[in-house]
Length: 410
Picture 1 (tube, rainbow, N blue to C red):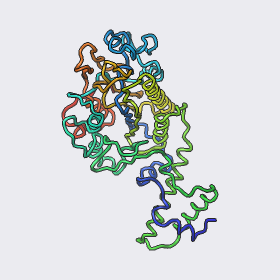
Picture 2 (picture 1 turned 45 degrees about the horizontal axis):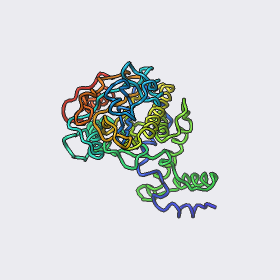
Picture 3 (picture 1 turned 120 degrees about the vertical axis):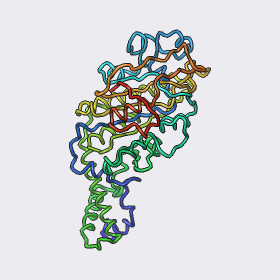
Picture 4 (picture 1 turned 90 degrees about the vertical axis):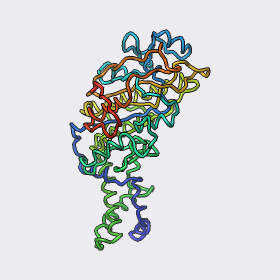
């Protein structure tokens, strides 16, 4: 039985409020009265394909002689791909992306990379996260620098949130703004014990009764009580908001699908963040690539297809843009282990109703390679400049060092 005295003992200090590593204010503001979603506030969802996605078997030049010659085992069946035109086709298991493409909600920026590409996972990932190929300074990321210069206009509101990551991605690291990382919404639920719901309700009632007990305003106990009640209010309001969320489509029961479902929940709950970050690993396909890569691109396609359909059904299709990136592509020639090794240029996918769908830029020339790698023709920082200036309405500098002309994709 839970008594007032035993509960006070259990409270101790901050242990009563198990709301995760970050303060709950971000969620408290969003959950106050389940506010209507701002129809004009634009949101960016970044999806990292960690490990180096094989762009050639994602968007395949199915009739290219060099492609078939250099990949005798891995080249996709020309009759199975989802044809985008008479030269290029999506992987056979990316039906969701093909539907988005046909609807004009999928843009494919081809031949994306950077000069003097680095084939190290760690260094190339840092380059994509910092947008600094020539500088190994990792104090902040490209979006983190954007958060720094836009902090004043946000008035203390949190600009971004990373989901499903154990540590904050470098891209979001800021020298002025704290960005929360969350494994799941359970991280922000008040933990009132693991026993019956009746006892949990009793504990919640005791928290509110204790908060009404006269206490010197400046005392530590007053602070503790205020914190506990704030956390309780936040948890209850957020639970109400998320319980009311009804996805308009079925999300795939995979990691990326469930993380994107959570993003959709938070967007529709009125969370103030403008940037969300999620990641999917496993793309380092050095051996037995066919089955592994098929599973990965299926997950990407099905998850982002469901995400877009859900948001569109809730009137948010033009407000949210999702963008994928990977630290590099793969070599054109397959290796002796039925896989592919670290390469260079690849593509980025943009998903949303406000973009210009279709293919953007030429597919890299497979007859003109750089030491076996595809040669990029679009610097990834041009895509970043597009996302910053044309989508979020933020300045590209100092997030990006140098001048990078935005693309005509929005």
